[in-house]
Image (cartoon, rainbow, N blue to C red):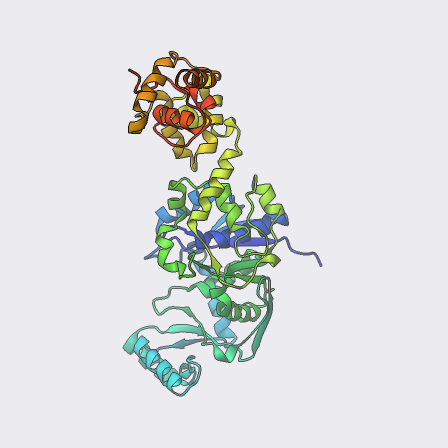
Length: 445
């Protein structure tokens, strides 16, 4: 018997922009596939025709492409409705699928009654006792009912790739609704059929899916298919342990991209966050794949702070050669002859690429001098000794030497007032590197 090719999938619903929580799932599945030389499927879960929008499909693809998470093929659930209908028919024929007609109010009353009796609030399967005439009458009165999968009341056991050995008593879980009254196929059935048909071998998703996984295992087994290897990663929280779900609107990948977060910074953090391995900035995707180990992740809620992405982004940019950013530098209007020197000067003084603009503005237009009152006379005297542009790499050293000789100042009392007067800033790049790039020094009399 041949071992099937490792196949994973990322299955977002196109009802909004994908966020940092979605990325964690996508990245883990992507790395598993790539590390084993397998296949990574982008599956668009668009069975909800009301909420699904094509603009979100495009946005999902754009976000994944930005990160370099390239899929091997795209599948869409909306093109597979016939397969779901076939699965539903098979389940009916084997007595594992039944129609139920309770209203939401009736179901809520049943749950409250069970809780009052200190029983698990699971569906009582009352619909199984309905006669054909009663079903017909309810259908005429209320319309089509929902279709539930009849669970086998036994323990469902599997080895989870992160959580270890798991066991859930199916009697403690309600028979899941797989098809709504309006005919819409729900996630649980559609996902099972997709995984079967597409040969998915590994499924990684959030720990909030553990119970859903148990029911899906029984559905897969009922349909006579092999069960994939499941793993459930911990859920993300905010930096103080607060529920991240309240802040996901500000953590969409497109928002992080607009903030200037670099893909490799984001991927490096998410590939290690919640694991026993330290977060380390990776050079490229190959390093990321090589260093990934699903078994190193734990079950505890994982704190995520978007601000942790900024130093990683800065460190990534500092490692880049000019060729990696030449297009951005050129777009600022930096002459080709100065591009290399400009990037060498600026890269250690930026957090995101957009910060380059302020440094080129300083070089091109000069800065409003920042001069303390007690330094005004000293700065005027120093500027009188500054040679005319263009400057070179020796200008700063020669100038400060001349100013020191003329005024007797030295150390911080010499260098800081001159830096502030030339750049308008108290800190920044090495002045010897900056001076050759300055086209203008403002404030000279």
